[in-house]
Length: 361
Image (tube, rainbow, N blue to C red; front, side):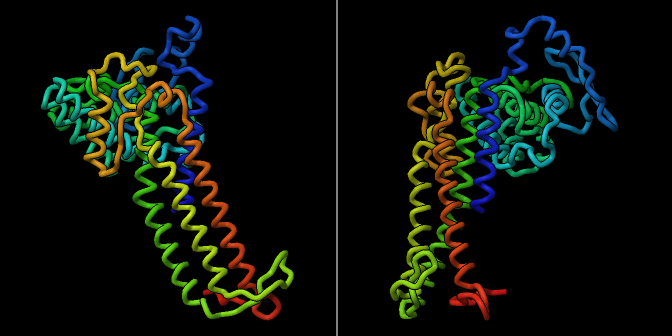
């Protein structure tokens, strides 16, 4: 389980960090007009089967008729068809986005968003959270900007499903608009780092911490069981002085305890959320207190102590917390490698190795 989380976090971090040296396709004002023309007229393959036509700032595009995603997702699939399917955006991040968009819809309702629209968005988000719409999130982690295309992928899927719930026409943007309603008071610059933190916190608390706790309990039990078994201690594989096998396993037990402690040390900063900072951290175009209310709503939804980040500029512009957590996970992995190698060596044989431990076959 540690391995799965360890793979998820750096993948998200690499996608974001890579985005810092690129420009979002949506930031068209930064491009020379000739570049815009080339992108606009670049031919995008038509998907197989029945299609519908959707439009964005670059013009019309064919999208699979059965897909909930729209034009921006389709363009990203074409322009950044990198590492699919192995490097698809991790599903824990998609679930985190579902939670975030649901929380934002609830808070936006408090600030005047139509109740029917808000409730339909929340219902669609519940399906995202439950994994019922996973097939509609096809994007790779390799993309432009600060997760702009994944944020829009979520906006498009949630809005299309909400439109269906309200009896609207698939492919339209009425009565639920992906930007004006699902992404209301948000920017990819604050939603993506927020979703990263939510995903990491959920994976830690649901999967990694329980697994580490179980391992710690098992090793502690073995340490007590082996307390009266004497063996020779070794330095550089050379015989040294006597010790008990229980003492040796107590070292492993403490390694796991320290691994748990290292991860918990990172968590307070992981619970600080960037949402509410919008594009650059000023919170422009958001109601006062939006980030605080969203964090509280996420706390209610997940039972995790999410809070409003005290400085949105840091929360948007850096990923120090993710780097810190990645370092802690790396330490956990190295620690487990040491334990595994020790046990493998002590179980070597049975005739010509050390053979102090009998490992299950």
